[in-house]
Length: 322
Image (tube, rainbow, N blue to C red):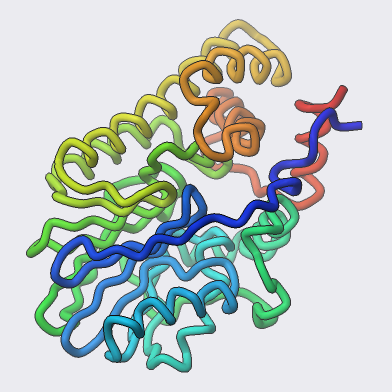
């Protein structure tokens, strides 16, 4: 029997939503550490970066957009494949949606593990899938994919989409407004929220953050946490994420080199990181997944194993059981 509730099944507290303007064309939809959505509104079209987890939850994003603009929401960008980011996409069909955009690497991950990931995520964190019955059957499939860089003009504002490197997943994609120096990072960057690393590439992630830093963003919308405004806050978000993933991976690598079993590595790593990061949102939720993935990567498994609902529970019992 587990000593505490599995993952975040016991997390029932609703979070306060903030919808704020960051520049002439960019807005952030944030909710006290719940997954964020980014919005870019041009003269001719709007783009939404990450859709929320269900159409009912996406409807609140649409309501906020309609308070400031009536332009069609022609584009949805998936920063990566995780269900909590993509399953709300169908809500935008009635708002003028023309393309659901993703990187080719994200499409490959949807094909490989989308169904299993969907079941896994819904089981872990029911509150983030409010009115899950509103999600259409099947997966959210991109209609436009790209390698390298894709640039769109929404009318008076240019959006550049590209992958700065692997980190949170192998397909992470950011949206960059070069004219206004606003970046939507997806879960490559978090702020006062624990990075989920269950599908991560730890060895690559710090260099990916370096690439983001070189953009010299004036504002950054992280995957979780408040929007970061000004160079000092942006730097803090990048530094905090880098420190967490680097320190966790170094601790796990040390355990693997010493020949320790996963549970021993987990217990030592969580004890080492809790004083500094334990107050971050979803710390206890993420750590079993994070350490398990880091243990695999440190042991030579470069491609993350697929999380299924069954594997989730088995891992939780093994690490958090009495």
